[in-house]
Image (tube, rainbow, N blue to C red; front, side):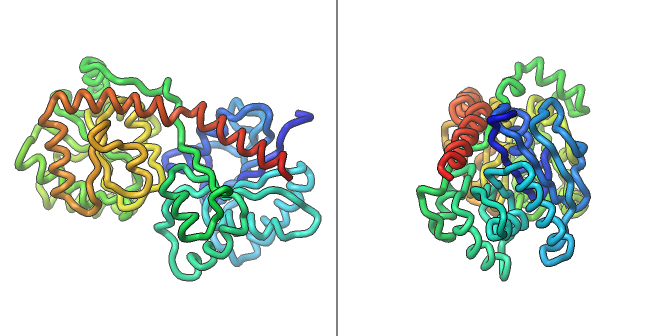
Length: 384
């Protein structure tokens, strides 16, 4: 397109699911307007597990490239930087947007090379729980020099301003969005049909949690809380854990030791999250750190009451006593008490269910997210 704005997106991971930044990019790129031409570099070492390189399905203005990169200080990184330098010149790239640390480093280096000129944006997706040592010091140095930051939550934006020295006027909060039409509040009959389809006990109520099985997601505290809940208050519930990761076997051992393994379903990665949420009665997140959880947004769009830890961007999705309850992290008893408070009060449960959908429609529409990002990118390009 003759008058298109040309973007380069660099991500340490890929476009797709199940992770938060992966879903965010998928939602954005499958909805971006034809006003933009976008090249996307994906640096996940094993390559994109979902989508082939080349034009994104049904989006001829978006092209995906897999460029595995495991080490920053390597020949492969130098080769990639040279390739991107040529790509920026050839496609007349106006804006380079980086996701995560390796991508930010490449963005920073590219801006200092001769023969090319563009605006930099760093998309910050989490609260920096992985940052430590030299990497943390490096990101504190690089981040302000990238000039522009986007963040899905006010908590991340505040951290960028307070800890990384970002000017407030260059820090832009644009919440994640989901396709609201893909999520529906289920009737009791519809929920039973989905339970049957997914192999869940039809007569049980379903509590779900979506996320990588990694320490930061706090699943061990969730299992402790679920054990307390089922033994003291109700044995009519099952817990469904959607996601995969290094802790799966350890968590299964824990569930067995707690005597709840028969009521905990480890279902791994699922590409039909909407159906699993539709079969659920409650969403619970015990995460220790969070930027802005797509899983919680999807749960809200499905009309589920939500219990989440009071960390990061969670309070921006879960309004305490409106569409769910917030508890402190690493506290199984508090998590259990919150589950009891919602599940033992039918009026509270129904009100929170209705309010969750209201919250999603008000704050987390994918159309709104895409529109706001496009407006920002066009403004930044127009300012150069």
